[in-house]
Length: 344
Image (cartoon, rainbow, N blue to C red):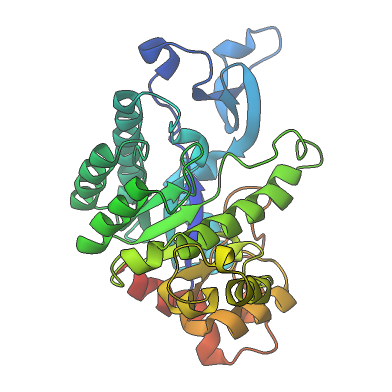
């Protein structure tokens, strides 16, 4: 039996303040809980079930269930799947990057405190990543420091804010703040590109998310982000880095043969592989082998995307059954890298 630490899982509070009533607008997230009722009764007067629909205004966004908000359910499923520790983070729909700063900061405090409340019921096995109002760097630095003091082990950010990529000066200032305070950063894709062209067949998730993740890594490299921010920065990108590892040769080739493709980076993209981590949510042994070959086993951490439908169903099995990995490498990916990265 190997220790397992899942760095990529999501939560929602069971209930939270009506943000539309507080701030106005018709696109705030909320949960519509399913109700049980006896025949003939108003369903809205029944007892809440363990299922809910995540809503954005009046539109259905995603079905979820009680593992998102109930620590006891989460722990039961962790025991079932052999997961020792889990790091929870908000789903990007809660980020509020498109809202006024005061509203986004309020939401960050609201959901960050809710995450700590869930972890407090987690028998010392649950840990939380904070969110910040990334559209305002001063507010983000203020909130991430507050969150660390309240018990968060790191911060999760979206990979862009509007048209600003990871190499934006403000984002880099925030990353330097995290480096200074030893706050690990987890970068999650969101608000995917080409939304109209990927609206069918869940292509926003299967195509858009990996593309956004690759874009975030490449923008950090070619935008000079890794040259500007301290090497003390701990940063990890979700979903195996998208297609980054597969297309690294293409990036290096462009860097060497066209000056315009070098951007602001001092070195070719492959030079920066020791500056960041990736999670292992790739669902395929060949893809995992490529990540290990390119990044090294010391730069990968197990992430499941639990408890969502497109996450790893048998958590950790991709790594434990990988034919090319030694037991020591498997343990690195499954737990030891994460425990060191997040200081848990």
